[in-house]
Length: 137
Image 1 (tube, rainbow, N blue to C red):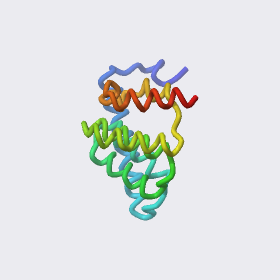
Image 2 (cartoon, rainbow, N blue to C red):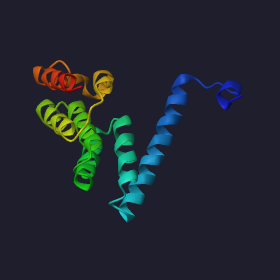
Image 3 (cartoon, helix red, strand yellow):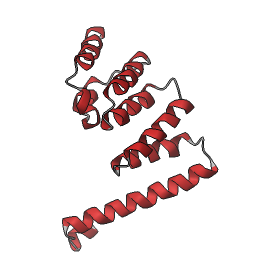
Image 4 (cartoon, one colour):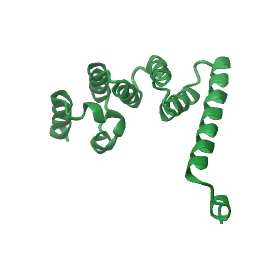
């Protein structure tokens, strides 16, 4: 029996506690990165947390640092595309997405279901990228 089953909390309190936990973890990772700024795993986790918390500009900055640390990683460029799309920077998001595909990103199903890039999914440029990926399969 989990704690939530034994002591159910109102959904808004549960959400608040989860957010506090995420904020604590983001602060912890930020401090760890102050000591070791090139810690790829910590920075990657922080980027994800910042985005989940709605701190999109900070998440974008973290994704940009990740691209600097690992410029040939297709997933890092995909995540940068997500951050840019969430901020409404469609052309830059599509540039990053295109670069991630050029580096080997091939997860079409994820791209189709990922809400982070939903804002660019209907663009003709996205559709062309998708068509090229499908043709290459």
